[in-house]
Image (tube, rainbow over all chains, first blue to last red; front, side):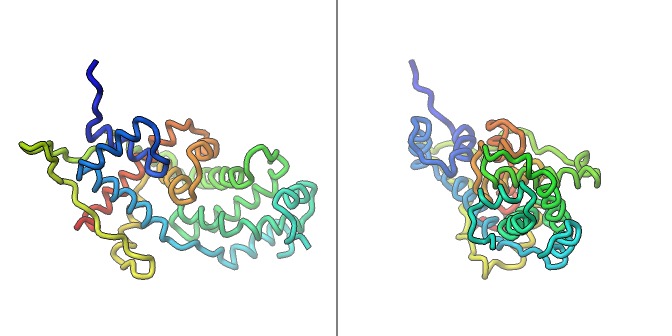
Length: 79
Length: 201
């Protein structure tokens, strides 16, 4: 039986899912092999990772004092 | 003093009506809730409204928390529901569009005569650090995430920004794990496409 070989669209579908998981399954090993020789998929995966990294650089926002005071007033709590 | 108590102890006390314990819960989780609400709403006023609604709902519904899931998982689901209620009031849910469509692809240039694949997907420059991220890129990031439909945005924020698992995200949003994965894939690709022109070398 001919072994099924994954092509770019299929690889892309999977690498999106596997971005942050440890590569260990047979499918993942095949993805790794494909990535090693496909500059397109490698560039695509890199750009996806960078997209996430950019969104992560947003600093945490602080709760406005006014908002905090309103909540404690509504719930009749002492801040 | 309640600040030395564990989350579990604080929650138990608050469930019994201890107001100091509830205040301690607010102190411990206010930044997490506000930050998450802001990332989903992308607007200070909406984030503030969602933040207030969330803690009012936590106050009213804390007795329903049974400790079987992590407290933060339960808290995220309260934020998501508060946000959903606000959106319904503003009738935004009906306006929510879908980005379902053909699966992602890049231009597959195929191989040359020697079997080498030619690169048609441009490489991206190194991501700038926060303190040097320029205004243009920040505007682009804001615009891209705002254009991402809410149902996808919330999955993206929970999974990729807050770092929750697909299972936890599914529990919070009442979605199956495959549905979470599918929305995440599409959200990532949607955002990536919108940054491509700026980031491509």
